[in-house]
Amino acid sequence: MNGKLFNKVAVILLSCFLVAGCTGGNSKNYEETKSTLKVLYNTEGNFYQQYGDVFSVNNKNIDFEVISTQGLNNNLEGKKYEEAFDELIQKENPDILLLSTGNYEKYVADGKLVELDPFIDKDKYSLEGIYPGLIDMLKEMGGNKLYGLAPTFYGNALFYNKELFSKYGVEQPHDGMTWQDIIDLARRFPVDGDEKSRIYGFGNDFPISVDHLVNIISNSEGLMNVNPGTMKVTVDTDSWKKVYQLAIDADKSGAIYNPKDGGFMGGSIEEYYQSQAFLMGRVAMMIGDPYTLQNLKLAQDTMKDYKPIDVGIVSGPVNSTDPTTTMGTSMNEIFAINANSPNKEAAWKFIKFVNGEDYARIKSRTMNGNLLTRMSFNKDFEGQSLDVFYALKPKVNGNNTSSDKIPSAFNEQFQSIMSREIALIQENKKSLDEAIRTIQAEGQVTLDNALINQEKNKGNPNSSTETPNKTDQVIIMREDEK
Image (cartoon, rainbow, N blue to C red; front, side):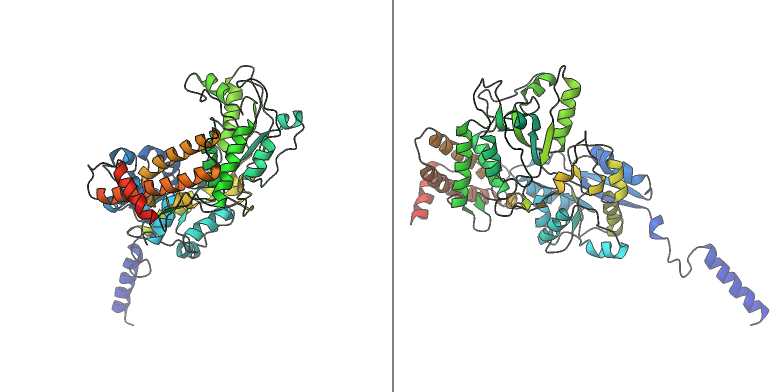
């Protein structure tokens, strides 16, 4: 090579190095590329407080545009919330979607989400340390694939007052109790005394009516009022009868906290705490969550002469047919990537961070009632271990994942039918079998009418959603009886 040619080659190579990427650099490195992620969240302020500010400290190349879901409920214009939610996503095309357990499965089935497994494999991103049951639950809803991750979840457990169990000689609750076990134990406490001062075997933050007890027991058992596949009411079964009987017998025994005055109706913070029977040491057991622990601490800090409760916590209630599982776990903040996103890599970077150890370490310093899915970062609270909330395997609740298929008008009317029939049983005016048959028959009529109304009202935001008149109901019932 002669001198002139050598000099020209040297200049060209030097130029390539100086501009950082004539060949191997391949333009700007991804880490240096500026991008804006559109994120679906309830409000911009909440997003930055919970996630955005923490993420941005070490990711200054990524900005956010928050698409707020606040106010969707106030502007439905005859649509269901799920329809308005879908329309917002279609209109704004956010990169990152915030989903609940209920609509995550639907969005997976509709092909609207990006599978995360390839990103996880490429980055060797470790899922070890994340609550395994939740990963299994997300994969189950995703057809054995992962389409979203949740940094936090909601879980409940059985709280109990150790002093009351000791005082009345009742053995303490154990892990994995069913509702039958819980109510049997509750009935071993005395039921005498004034309503405002006596002890109750089981209670909650609010009075528990029989129909509410039916709802929470059936939810734990994974029972559904309606089969969303056939749109048939399903309460006339042995499983449902057992739930109704258990709830009615529990209320009749006097073991359940259900004061006639309806509980706290407003007042000072001290009056609020005084209305909480478990906090005041008058209820032996309740279903609670980490916020219950915070409430106990706040009551102690707020009220004069407050006597702290020696609290125990065990896992449960469990599904009686599968006692290693719970229906009491849900996720309201599943982050997923929109299949139409042009910023999938940046979106994954955000999801990876908020589900990672660094984020969990930061958020473990505060407690807001939810639990971190990164298990090792949930610190003990006031001497109480939170491990119990991870003891059971979460199970998909069909009531949550299929709620968008059931007309909203049906639920309120069905609840009214159910309450009326339970009252008739309590007044000895109907047998349980008779009441169940009525709930089944009238419930089906109500559902059929709600479906007809829903179909009529499609595309007509100003149309009424009232129940069809009685004549329409009679016609449908006659058709069913043919």
